[in-house]
Image (cartoon, rainbow, N blue to C red; front, side, top):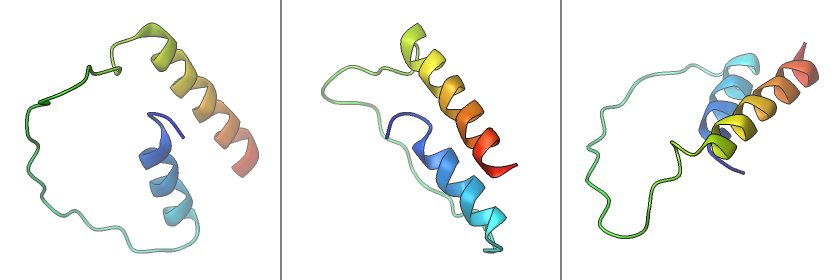
Length: 58
């Protein structure tokens, strides 16, 4: 859960031996709500989640 979730899926899939390929996608401007990616608490939580995953997988 959170901003790190897609990265976590990628890391776990790669570690499990899945083949990773790139597929182009089109991103559209946000029409409602507010982005949270620039908030310091979101950045810190993502970093903490990364450290927890690293510790779990090593």
